[in-house]
Image (cartoon, rainbow, N blue to C red; front, top):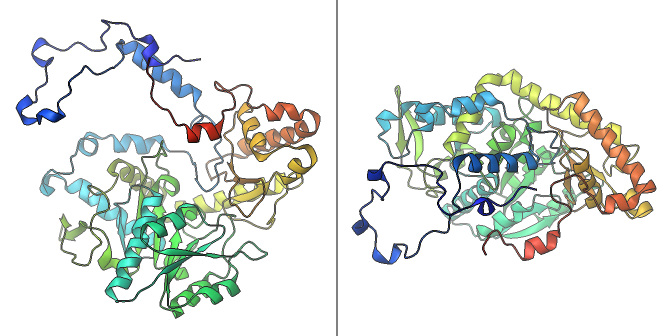
Length: 481
């Protein structure tokens, strides 16, 4: 077990030695208000540089990540992040740029921002885009703020947003954050939106519908044309949660399906890293009628020069301090340029092929409630194991860690009991998926032969099973004596 870095600390140890003239702060104290000056020494560990490096290297090997092995986290699209993207983003002219430097000295960075907006519009079939939102949920909030602004300008008092019962939890949260109320939509027997329920609830008090397509069951909304038509007939807007865009690249575009707004997770679809709450990038793309409301500044091209333009009087304003998570955007730009349209299409086709391969392999052992051709992911159920052996989906997920795999998303979507939401992405080989299938089949056998082994899993990880409820209710991330 790796110790806390404070446990390595010894008085007098130094990680770096500075020349005497640089040891004191170079910021004159008179520039800092007296009430903001620290009165006591910071309680930092006193450790050497090798100790710091080894400590964090050791910690990194204890965590499961996509560079270590398969990470089939449904709806999160944990695909491999090509290292060439990292090299490009670390180029000094990009990594050392500053958002406040003069535009004339940042033409390359502005060109990248401008061009990736154009690429995202072409990929989604939309007219305009913004890169400001810092994550998918932030993109959702930006999207519903655009909806709010649109109806305010039309002087229409729209109160509700429709949310399918299989939606991501951030959808109703984003709608509520923009002062909308939400109405649930039922799923039909095939796992798609119940059109009769949509027709009954869609009227002139409803601002629109937030729809994930493919939905969280991994199923394409086959009646999407009729869905968008119903909403538009009542003057509403249709927002596409783009969390599952990895299934659509080069095959079908949100704009062509009738959506008015879509968010795009660069940290899912376009291979940029996920992180502990960040970095992310939840770009938004919209149709022409919503473009005037996009956040400012907008990136414009005048001849061969690029500039930041604030002159959009109907904009919702800024949603992030500067122009988006630039390093993440550079990674996604490289990925799109390397892949091209045919490469992007191959990504989605392979993701779909991989998901259906796993679904077929596991369907004899695990219940698949909506067992038909899926897109990039599918939802299995551990209900059979639960009923027969008392094994919960959580037990299956924890046991997978002992076989070297991260668990799928569990207990979501809520309309499937004991859900296991599995997304292989296009990154994984047949050999890796076969190892994953064999691990799940072994776990199924263990459910009958040695259920206690599953109840107590994991056995081989640095930390055994945690009390997750206690961790949520009594969060403590500080250390102190």
